Image (cartoon, rainbow, N blue to C red):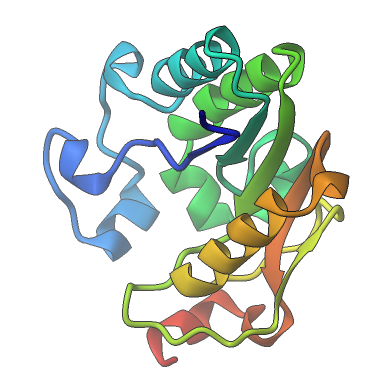
Length: 173
């Protein structure tokens, strides 16, 4: 029997109609994709509903900075690049809150490339104005820690690393 579901489901760059250089996308906006084909809401909603139907009590949802009350925390280019995703993630977060599941929502800022070293200094904060980029390994640790900490249930957090607050350092770290 399972005791939790962790969802990182979302639209990946390879799912878009045409892959684009990250810098070009930041300034020209995202490639458009039919929202009904994106898993950001529908896929997560299906996972949440399936978890509830199966009696799995806990759901950890890794979403995106810029969702809900964290909209202003996301840098302008990130908001522009995520303009199609943010409303879908908002819907998914709302669905989870109304589901009756013991949920934890984690909103990372920019995810560093897979080879970006963990710092071990990343934390969860309930301050929606916080922003930093974060190593995937640090985010994974925060998710696992949340699974083992019942006090995180019913809360929405930003995954934040004080040593990585300047997004432009992502390109030199």
